[in-house]
Image (cartoon, rainbow, N blue to C red; front, top):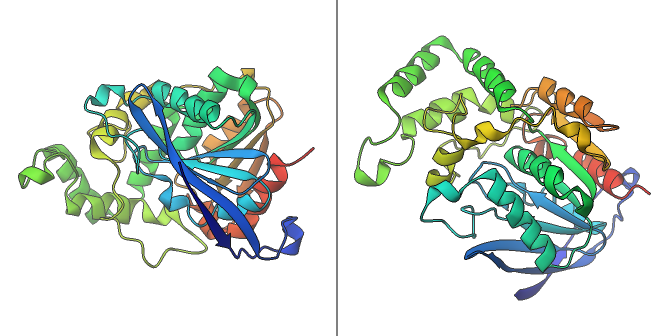
Amino acid sequence: MLTVAALFLLAAEPSAGIPNTPVDLPAAEGWVTRNNVMLWYLSVGKGPPLLVLHGGPGNSHDYLMPWLVPLARTNRVVFIDERGSGRSTRLEDPAHYTIENMVDDVEAVREALELGKISLLGHSFGGALAQAYALKYQDNLSHLVLSSTFSSTKALNEALAKMKAAMPAAERKKLEALEKAGLFGKGEKWEHGRYSEEYEKLAWGVGYFPFLYHRRPDPAFDPTQGAPEWSLYRQMWGSHGEFVVDGNLTSVEYLDKLKTIKVPTLVTVGDHDQVDPALAKATAAAIPGAKLVILPDSGHMCFVDQPELYVKTVAEFVNAK
């Protein structure tokens, strides 16, 4: 394990209950190995452990930085890169990219770092993974935070269909023509396993961007950058485009099971979220005693649109006595 020290000068509103002074926060990074899969992690801060799961599937923890780092003022925040993502192992056989395997990866990290009971925060796909973990390892949780996520792939597909229908007609026509022709196996050899740049701009740009941000759109956003690990993405999301999930994520149908979750749960969503707020309401209603917070003027990247409010909401919840 490589141990480093990082000085974070993190400003916070006094009302957030987070010290508004420079703090020298310990940081350490390393890998946990499970069944030949090397899982990268970054641990920042001290205090009750808060483990963070990123979205995608197939992105990395990077897009959560630096937005979630202020949580390290009150908690030991552990970011991980899920299997196949970021600095973690790419697998030869994509069939091993499943949410069920990733649940056991999370447990391996918790055990290896001797975290004891953890608060678990999942954003987007990471929220579905966090639910799956809670359904299997509930006794290891103190708190559960589900941000901009879904509990039913069927419901998510309905929301994605509405998002696609909201695209300008001309761009939607181009996008559907590309989908009909098949999205993979085109262009140069190195391009065969991924979307074309034209499709990325239409789907992730024209289609998604209005739902990613609202109050603070990222001026550096580029739909052709930051693509997921493709073999993982196709295995889990599917091969028929951005507006239908038909990979093995169709296993995410948890609504009828969520009533068994008894740990304190916070569900957050942006009021302009890519994941329709109706999905968050259904998730919160299914978990006994869950707290629902709809962040105003926020899209899917609610911690970018409302950074202080998001951190305050999460920090107060996971540290409540």
